[in-house]
Image (cartoon, rainbow, N blue to C red):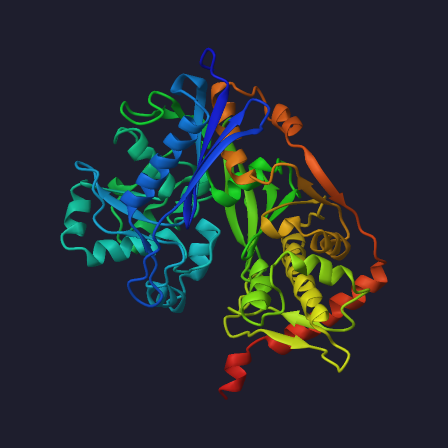
Length: 503
């Protein structure tokens, strides 16, 4: 650790904004700066960012948070990076200039190509090697699209003139002045080019997508010194020492470091991740198997499941139906009732994610009677978030054979006490809500600080994570089981709705 350096900076590059968060040696937030950047939708289903705008917004907030707290480069021991995953950037090695906009993880332009791979029977091979289901979500088909559609790109790639990176790699390149072209295993495992068993780029996958290996970054561990920030960039000469994709960083920041430990991030959707130990678990329930991180030479793995509509259900009740003035009202409205009185809301507003993966499902409200009020619908919406998380947790348990030890939570909707208590009842386990809700950036800071000796061990990190609230099961198992049966009945009525209605 640098002499007199007492802080670690986390660079948190998200889908809609860039943030920089400075932490002290006790894991407390010292300062934070955030800046939104432009979302580009050139065609239906296409989502792009300008890579230079990602960089400029990130560089800006780094400088801002340092200036606002009078922090100099010499005060920083290390920088950790966490990032939106799968988003794809290709640039010229010589000039550092992107040859196309960043294609964002949400982009669907390559869906037809990926559907063809499935039709050709390549899904099992892709799943076996990468732990991922064939989908346009991941980076490989995005790289292929850029090479196929940007003039001269393929020829340049074959001559070793182009570099590919997910957003972490792009930021490392820019921070180091083009000296470092690297990523970590958590991000590499989201490209669909990385074999999660051998922990190497896979030649068969590269050939399938027509990608020259010279484009790929070196895969380092998630916690080591990658290099140093270049002169002329704030903060110059500080080591870049920790990297992890956003959901993995959150898992690390929540200290879910043993098999069976899990976290849920409650945002617009819900992202669940369970630590599965030192070897990947092949899901039989359409969950993703992914690298969690590599620390101290040891690779840890996780299962991931995504709920499409979590907090967005409450936003829809507010903005779409006008049942709420503010999302925060939902807690009070739901708590006034003893139960939802048989009302169920299936929030399949964009289909259903894991473990159903039904794009043809549609949202529905069941069990309405003359006595139903808007409070019943609001409560049913909050309960639906907990029910969906339960569905994914059950799928994870079937895949791993591990029962859930506890659930750690973060994200905006995790502040809703009614939802957290109901989640505890439904899962029949304790829900732990930390004091510091910034678990994603905290995870990046922890990884960086470990690498340079700010913290000596993971056990030391465990002691830094303070729990604000613990929610324990209160309702009887019989009562919850009846509710779960009603939920499953409601979901069954919502599945394949578009397909059924078109027959």
